[in-house]
Image (cartoon, rainbow, N blue to C red):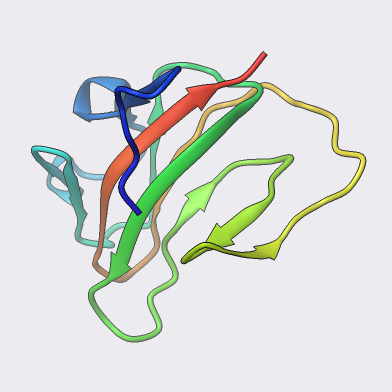
Length: 118
């Protein structure tokens, strides 16, 4: 899904918005809007900014069958390919970082965009 980043409030996230928390420097590699991860060692890349209430779009693909990497966040409704696949009721917003996970298998993330909500 392509997001109109010119739309109200949307902004792209890139390498300047993230910090490698606990992986080797070569685990994560930015190529424009594409973030490639080797999956080794296990760990995370997190945003520099703390978020509370937002909409997030991330495209990702596992490069090996049965990959287990993904996106860490809380108070969430999740859509995959325009279909809601999970969600919660009566959620209370919490503050925290958004994390991308390195979990043993190569993965790519791209077109990461966020829109903060009131």
